[in-house]
Image 1 (cartoon, rainbow, N blue to C red):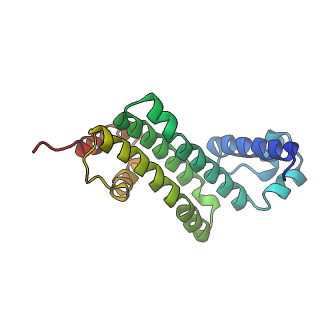
Image 2: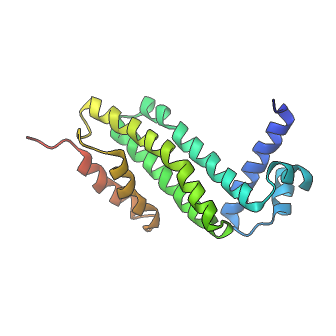
Image 3: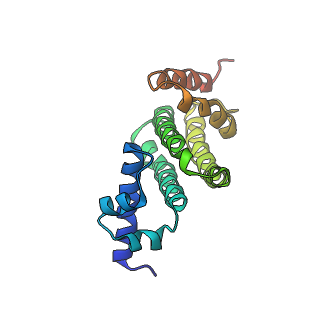
Length: 176
């Protein structure tokens, strides 16, 4: 069992690293420790390498996004929940891409493999809610949706919402 102060230190380190990587991708481990208010030893006990820290920040982000599905569905209709969730995923992908220089090709592969299943599960939940509500066509596939939306993080920020609207229009049930 992890002590509460150790959990708090880990959470502070992840939060500080997330902010630092957004501000400047080349922030040093010592700068992250200072930002988190912990010693270098505490940082390296939790994250022995910069790559381990980057991977943990990304995994934490994926868990947060995947965990937001039920709340979005509770507050919005399925199509709007899917739209909001996808825009959040796109932003996470942009941040991940910005961290890419700090990762080896093997770490990139591991990150993609770890996040694929949970992301597909989240998309499935959103699509199934829309199918039950009659607002998303019955043949909508989570893998297809993910592949279509994968290009959005590469688009200019102001274009991504318009492009997503086109994708979502294609999910509407077809008359017939």
